[in-house]
View 1: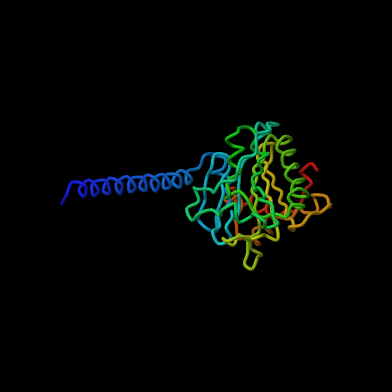
View 2: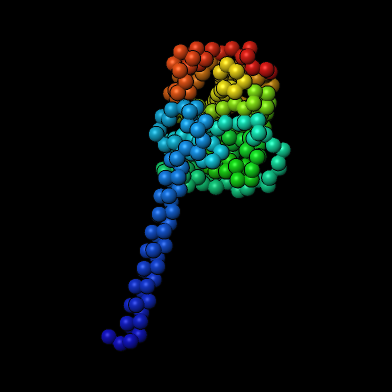
Amino acid sequence: MNRNKIYSIIALVILLGVYGYESFLKEEGAFQIIQNGKETKSNTNEYFLPTSTTGQVVHHEGYSLSYNEKYEQSEWVAYELKKSHLSKNNFKRPYFEIDKAVRTGAANWRNYKNSGYDRGHLCPAADRRYSKFAHDETFLTSNISPQEHQFNAGIWNRLEQKVRYWASKYNGVFVVTGGVLKPKLKIIGDENVSVPNQFYKVLIDNNSGKTKMIAFLMPHRNSNKPLYEFVVSVDEIEKLTGIDFCPELDDAIENKLEASDSYKNWSF
């Protein structure tokens, strides 16, 4: 075998070794991201988290989520919005990124391109302005759902603003939000991202005295109706979604709170 051929073989072996090592590092890095996503980052989140119908719960620094691969979005996103989190910082809007902590693979943001739907945040970026990292983290694709623009910028935005008002008034609230996911929904994109017909938001106040809850269920269209007309019992949302909200609460308290559709203890 001549010297040139030997050198070619050696070069090929080195190239394959480098490629294999780089692939190993990528796989190891991806595995580590998924493992980190399994660890709760907040005692509050750990206590107030709903159940997951998919078993795929991911914890980020600013929120936790339960990803539903069938519908290519989260069935819920949950986070505590403290009064100290409220900020007027105006960070530059980043690009959306695929959430690598989702084991089954989060949907690509390109599914929304030219779909006619907004990339609707579930945990709003405006709720995470207390740091640039927390703000930018809301632009992971596991935190979005297809929303009509008029809905996203209209009634849904009004509700998000009201949540911030309550967070200030009650020294923080815990928020769970998502779309109602069920078969035969409209889909968009190459990955068949489902478009919910309804969106919900469940709030828990555990800071201003006696624990209280309120839940909203909104059709996926804009409305000029007052927000209190969308108040429902948590039980109703549980029946629609199969999710158990606040399973760690004492059963007697949980059952009483979740059966009520009263909003008298919340300032509108």
